[in-house]
Each structure stands twice: as structure tokens, then as C-alpha cells.
Image: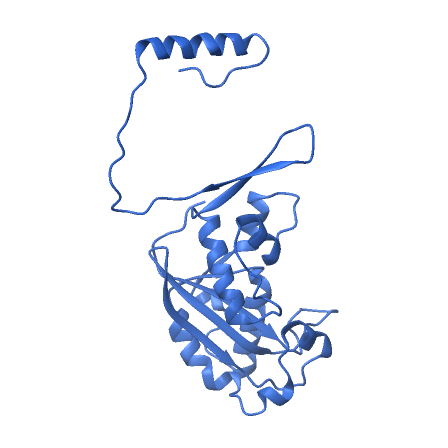
Amino acid sequence: MKATNQRIIVFDTETTGMNMTGPHYEGHGIVEIGAVEIIDRKLTGKTFHVYIKPDRAIEPEAIAVHGITDEFLRDKPVYADIHQEFIDFIDGAELVAHNASFDTGFMDYEFHKMGASIAKIEDICQVTDTLDMAKRLFPGKRNNLDILCSRYGIDNSHRTMHGALLDAEILADVYLMMTGGQTSLRLSSGNDDSTTEFSIRHLVDGRKVLKVVHATADELTAHQDRLDLIGKKADVIWRL
């Protein structure tokens, strides 16, 4: 998978909870939005972060996840107050989120509640779901954000609770890894549970050209002889 060089916004939301019997966003609201900007596969340092006072109380289960309370939000703006600033930040970008339908569902519901002229966030942004990407890369495996951090060797030890901006920053690292950044391989010996981990680093632009050392004729012959020996017991995929 390859990422484009266009402007990318990685974002996340925290909410008052979620509806369990109908659309997940119905009757609830956003309490935090966090977003970070990527251009040319580099984090620019430009962010959007805001806490929002919802039109209802936050459920205890949600507070246990993100730690945001009604008291904390008492003096924060309502969504309508920050709507245009958020739209200006994401307008025309590729929008990246993990389990994107959750976040975009809440955003579209906020648009609906305030009677915004934009019906859906997909009207102004291309939306990319990193959960869908992860399912294609790692079929049949769990692919939540913590597991992806572990899989790609990203330090998220500071993530003791969910937070929209923190999660967006972590997801940006995951997204860059998934689309061609530094990664790691865990290779099993086959007969036991032991693994060996190797790091693969993508070299930076402007590096010195590496000297290419070509094999001699004798070395090529020895290589083919070794492959002939291996070929007596197994299929050989390294033939020149």
C-alpha cells in the first residue's frame, strides 16, 4: 500500500458514549476532536484540537475510556462554534481514521444537528480507514490501535487513556508505517515458538550512493552449485 503525497489529515474523536440499539451516534455527541497534518509523508506539526461541550451528559462508561467529564467541559464551546474552523482544517484533504465509520458517523450527526449545509464529511474529504487497511494486511488478526503499535514497534506507553489528539498522533505513525515507513519483521523458526525480530529502515533522501560489488564468475558458479544441492531436497526460488 502506498500513500499519496497530497495533504493528509489523521483524526480521532471522543464521544459521550454510543447508542447500542440503533445508529451508534444517535442521541450522543462529540466531546473532543484531534487531528494532525501530513504533507509529503511528513508530519508538519500543524494540528487541530478542541474539547466540545455536548448537549447531554457523558455516560460513565465513556468517562472510563477517555477521562473527560461534564464538569471539565462546562466552559468549552459547543460544536457549532468550532464547526467552520474544523471544516477549514480538513477541506480537500484525505481524511484518515481508524474504524473511520465510527468517527465520520458522529461528525455527520453533528452536521445534521446544527443544520449544516454539508450533509456528510465525505462531501469534502476522501476518507481512508486504517482498520480496513489493517484487515487486508493482517487478515484474521486483531487490528486495534494498541496491537498495531506493538506490531510496528511504535511506542504508545504514554497512552494510558484514550485521547483524540494523542490517538491521532499515534495513528499517524501507524499509517505511515502501513503505507511504506519503517517496519519490523518477526520470523519464526518453524518448529517452536521462538521468534527473531529484524528492523527494516527506509533510507533518507540525499544519502551517498552505495558501491555495488558484483559477484565473480567463480562465485556465481559456487552459488549455482549450492542451489543444486538445496534443490535435491526442496524447491529453489533463488535461481539467477
